[in-house]
Length: 185
Image 1 (cartoon, one colour):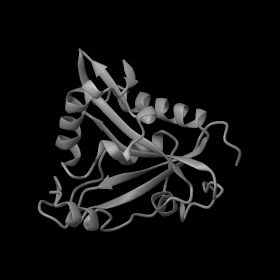
Image 2: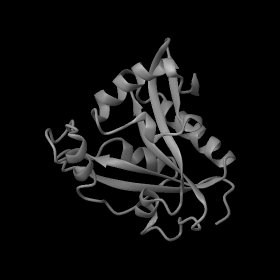
Image 3: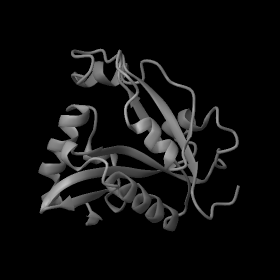
Image 4: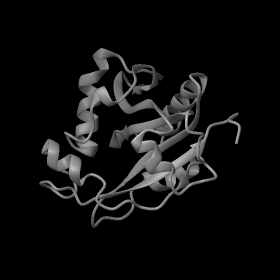
């Protein structure tokens, strides 16, 4: 079952996010309540998606959209920023991530967003994670990798990367961008 993230879901969602991306690399405050969802299976939070609306001129939106001129939204247009998407290991490959993403895209479209973007985490020294083919199969166009994306934030927050260890994080990201269904090009 896909539903909006509730306050009572936060402890389970936090454990899932901490386990998969590490504490300090995410924050509920960086997401909009109306665009954050969980998938519940067997009475447990099995997946979580945190997202927010961002003006296309927002720093993260500009960074994601900069080399993707065919996908770029006009300056005042809203974009869905998929901040975090995590599925517990026992629930992977069951379509939960796709359902969460589709729900967030639909809700964001209803709120006026015409573009969606996400940053796929590329762990330093590891193979490309499942996020790369996942976003591409969901219709997102990949952009150029951005090296050292998390380094400043990891130093500032003291966040310990699950791949690199102590700050600074050396991981890169790959931006993924999609025009939402029904959006004028």
